[in-house]
Image (cartoon, rainbow over all chains, first blue to last red; front, side):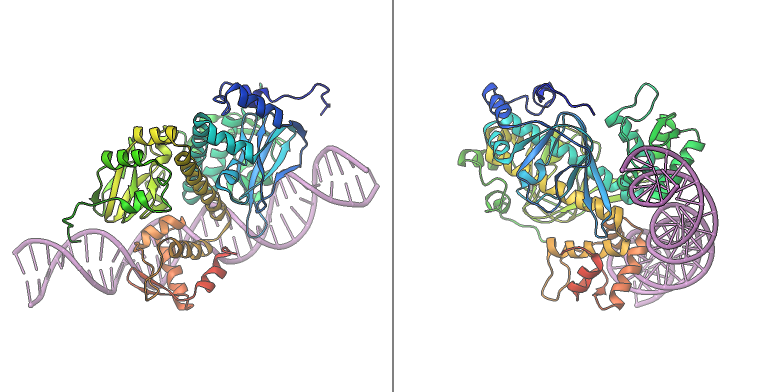
Amino acid sequence: MKKQDETPTCDYCFKNINSIFRHLTPEQMDLLSYTTTPRIYEKGETLYHEGRRINGVYCIESGIVKIFKTGFDGKEQIIMFGKGGDIIGYRSVLANELACTTAKIIEEGLLCFIPANLLLQFVKESPGFSYEIMKLACKELGDANQYITDLAQKSVRERLAEILLHLVEKFGIDGENNLKISLTREELANIVGTATESVIRLLSDFKHSGLIDLQGRKIKILDMNGLKHISNAFP
Amino acid sequence: MKKQDETPTCDYCFKNINSIFRHLTPEQMDLLSYTTTPRIYEKGETLYHEGRRINGVYCIESGIVKIFKTGFDGKEQIIMFGKGGDIIGYRSVLANELACTTAKIIEEGLLCFIPANLLLQFVKESPGFSYEIMKLACKELGDANQYITDLAQKSVRERLAEILLHLVEKFGIDGENNLKISLTREELANIVGTATESVIRLLSDFKHSGLIDLQGRKIKILDMNGLKHISNAFP
DNA sequence: CGTGGGTTTGAGTGGGCTCAAGCCCGGTGG
DNA sequence: CCACCGGGCTTGAGCCCACTCAAACCCACG
């Protein structure tokens, strides 16, 4: 929560070995650093709104962003989370469509905004960058297809177990096996695609089966293999 | 069903104004025509298998391809259909992963196979082509996100109505308002993500409500607006 | 010490699944 | 030509998962 005095930098985003920007030339990197201004975004801030125009993408240096669609009756469906190193919003910019999701900060962090024209310039100029973005989209598409199948065919119980494992994979666990991301029960329900009460009952069920332990929002993972078994995934 | 004597060509795929190949140079187009050999694929043939390596993509000149994942218990989940002008399999080739879906012909037609290295060469050489593929992936990603939300939040009834409208949009209707794609009840169920019996009951329900008419596999669309209303989509 | 957001628990219900049987129709072989 | 077969389609019965509604609890915070 304490404010940082030093000028924030986007080293993790831009210069990391796995960064999608790693194929840019030094000149392009300079342009990127020059054009973008990283800043701290606080919990609850909205980066972009479903259905509105989006004139750039966000690169996440730290923090967590939830990306969701709003259904017919106003219920959120969480599509994915973004964390350090991720780039979000590129779908709508590249497809030149209105945003199909809303992005909201759920854990404060440093992000930087990259204007659409700069992104498009890099796409045109750099086949390497272009290819990275393409791979990213294809990867997400594969994940989406998997989730469609799960939603269509698996029970809520299976899906919840699977989601817990996905969260472990993406955000990791601390020294005491606690999941590093903190979500409300409702948010969990909005990932799994079920009612809040169902998540509560199933979590409590998992706890009594010795698979997890619960302390408020902290979820301690006790038996990964048990969860894998329930999820019917992760072969 | 009658065999064609003339050499098949891929004009629709390659030279159409909306083709993703439209930004290729004449030399690249020649290379494409020279390298690929279009052929008729018959109903039931499998283009590629989920979980196996895929060493190229398919361009559909005519016919219909169903693309599906196989769930834990062997049930198919249809992810999308491909028709004339579509290109399929690029996801796995570009992400350099095993195929995440299976592709099977459900209506015979002319397709041509484009080897992975040729595709990748074009991606590297032609920013225009690269951008087209990127847009395609982004478009599909948007559709996938929408379907995730629908599966998670809508009833089977709503989803079935929506799927019927999607099929009208993609495949059109003939002079008598019959849907131009012919699917088994089971296939319909495998799109919607439900049991075959549920589809049958709901179709019969829609028929009694005057929304559609049924003659074997033919589905006649009588009331688009009624379907829209039920689907809670298409604003 | 109230207030409100999040969480938990219980009761009741119904959408949609499973299982089972029968029907329809085109194909096949005696 | 007819009997048989099999795949797809339809209908019915029963059940259970998961949703809804309602009430109470917890706890951080002003």
